[in-house]
Image (tube, rainbow, N blue to C red; front, side, top):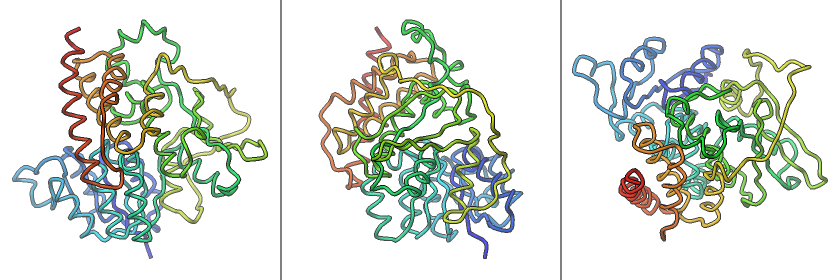
Length: 381
């Protein structure tokens, strides 16, 4: 029997890669739901390839002429579509905090959650895992780094793992002097050296906010304290993660930088099927590693601060960063203002529990409001 797959964010980078995997294995998967935020034309175009799939447009209602083709719209419509499509597995490729409620709905529906939306776990990891345990469903990481860690930890046993090591490409500005960072444009930040990704995550990669979010995600996924999770810059993006065992040995997962590979692993889990997307051939290029420069890119250290404080601070970190990136893209903030704004918001007192959805959503909204207000002071300097 084919596995029933719902793809949230089908018109984005993760969604398109997931559809590539599914098209390569038509005998294994049936697409039952496709969603997009506002890309109506893109959603309709993909829908023609999967005529049995329900279509949902979460960010707006479709035009009157297209209403019959798109059955669900708005956030509530997307949540209803997840229920009505009866998926076996949900690939959540939605960008940002908007992915949290769909993740919770997928768990409620009893579906395996293939999670590319790291904000789900950053904002509400304890709540999400508590609900997943109650429903008896698995959460599978789709980020290349966390997918690598997932397989390495499962292969060697968590009780033997002493340290998790995430790799970072370092982004396009790794070699820039600190004073040069103030002049970076959004167009420059949207040009990642090794990965083809959506706009928000590409800018987060340039600032190392993405790696900060991944540190928090790893804390949640593997129940490891933040001091046991390290980050190393690896510009070639061939080694996706490493683990250090209690005997000191290091084990790494290597593959081409192709998001179809971790998506393939998640869709087929727990089995391992042939992947048609190429192999990493030996010999290959020289691999280099270096420590991240947290003085030039403080978003990484701010993430560690947020997860150490706990509670709703990780949600606040994410919210402030999302606002800062949005304003940077619009030209209202400089690249160096992203960490400045995030740090300012994190310094406030935030009270709330990360197992209470109302507390999380309230902190998220208040942090956004405060970030918008404070951004005006920064831009006036």
